[in-house]
Length: 123
Image 1 (spheres, rainbow, N blue to C red):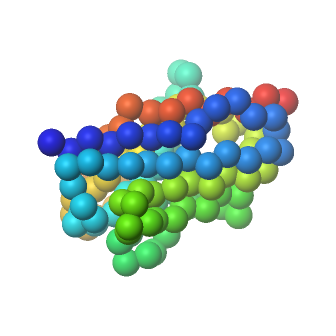
Image 2 (cartoon, helix red, strand yellow):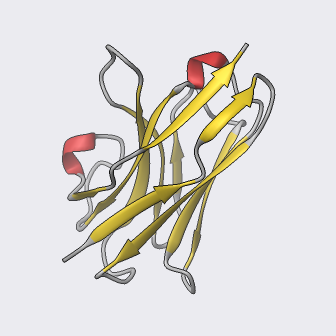
């Protein structure tokens, strides 16, 4: 059974940095790619970043130039480096994996999800 686990969330001041990591068990890098989404209270889940196993990356406009997604084949992890964090980045961040090609920006295209990790940015 595939399980995905996020780690690295926490509380940080505006302008600070955090690094989230997504580990997967029960599966190797045989899917199409992995992404990060976030959901703030009362808001819909929104796309943040994604990476294909060939290395192509996608970012939401709101995080472009501040966040970097990367993959580690040895550790089977995908990380999200978040810099210059803003209070509007506060949300629960979810890691997800998709098994096949298609849109990387849409949550419904993903097959496996983690439980999420809280990121809180204070002003």
